[in-house]
Image 1 (cartoon, rainbow, N blue to C red):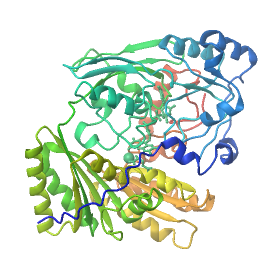
Image 2 (image 1 turned 180 degrees about the vertical axis):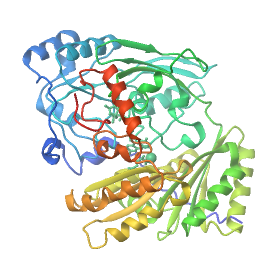
Image 3 (image 1 turned 90 degrees about the vertical axis):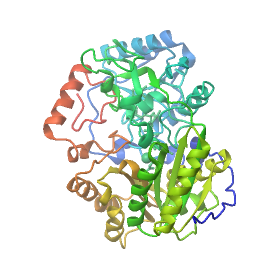
Length: 511
Ligand code: FAD
Ligand code: 2HG
Ligand code: ZN
């Protein structure tokens, strides 16, 4: 029988992404990007003047144009506190028409713009590199409609994911994506990064569940692809251009999203395993035993889990020296049916010797406590100082190899932790290496080695976080020269003056 090592309820603790991390390093401690990456050249953009500010104030009102250095600062620094721009202005439109007027003006005056949602991106894409104007979607937060029958939500781009989750739940629906940053990230940011998250295994990528988008091109043209239809094969599927283009092709202003029904029964098992081989065996078994009710299959190694346990002071549901842990979630329409399936799976996994220990939760607060352990890892690791983050897709059989290889490679260096966690079900590993502070020698030991290794194993150098600012130099490890050329051509058509999020995604100098 499966060992129901009952969880002594972990402390219910809802961490706030913004305040938690801000308390460790302040924005002003972060080195300016233009200093840290001193070989970068500012593009030939105009610098913002009082005349430009007056124009923005005339269309937005004074209160929605921030120019005071103290007000602007948090928009200049990324969530990880690893890059810092020097923007002098933040614009906060409320409508598509205002976004259009801003971009038309910026395009005519060759002013560079950095679109920003919740600023939770992990690749430095959401903050300026030099003095780009920040266009924040924070006030574009209206839910336009929710159709209970079709399950289609239409909303503005600045809606916070967690708020949308609560809104659609009132209609018996759920959002098709979920991620640790849900309390801060915007749906427009999710679309622009093509965010993956913890339920992609079940509900697929946003390329499937985003039915339509409205976006504004660099010259201010509003592109209305806000279809709410499931089927629409009328020519090129333009909406996909905005999914994952990280603000370089247009500003997403509205979206139509297919929301699945909210499941009636959710169960979470948190399991202890002693080898990665057993992780893979458990995954195979879960797929065959749990089938359609499997909604997450998340993995963390000992250092990742213990970072969350110690930093967030959470109860550890498995022995503290457990080499590997899994969080497996099922969701479906019938609790008896789901529990019976889960029980069978757990018994079989125990009998086969795949799992050693674990706990099971079906009550919402206990489920949340278990998820907090997994979702709190990113924040906890940041407490060490600087985090070198790698978000890679790999063939499943090589999923964990790089963590051990990297530990060996970094012996004798000042790194603190080298750990791996992520979405096994999607073949997506988060390799994180922490150190007291940014160290170029350490970086040079990790890169380009980690990318070469990933490429050699036919993996992707960015599974779900995107390219942003930090990965432009390595995108060629996962994209052919021809593909990169086509990307540059598309950029030139959509944004000929290169004003939208320069220095991001595409390798090479901006326009
Ligand atoms: P921002 O960070 O503000 O922006 C991200 C990029 O999108 C930038 O390039 C920006 O210019 C662009 N952008 C933003 N809004 C728009 C818009 N309206 N139009 C055009 N461009 C725009 N990511 C995952 O994929 N899976 C995870 O599981 C996951 N977990 C996370 C957990 C934590 C604790 C944190 C801090 C981050 C996590 N992330 C994850 C990364 C991040 O949350 C996602 O990339 C998210 O989608 C970013 O949304 P945002 O609103 O914060 O966008
Ligand atoms: C997650 O899955 C996020 O928790 C963040 O994608 C991963 O911080 C990371 O490396
Ligand atoms: Zn992830």
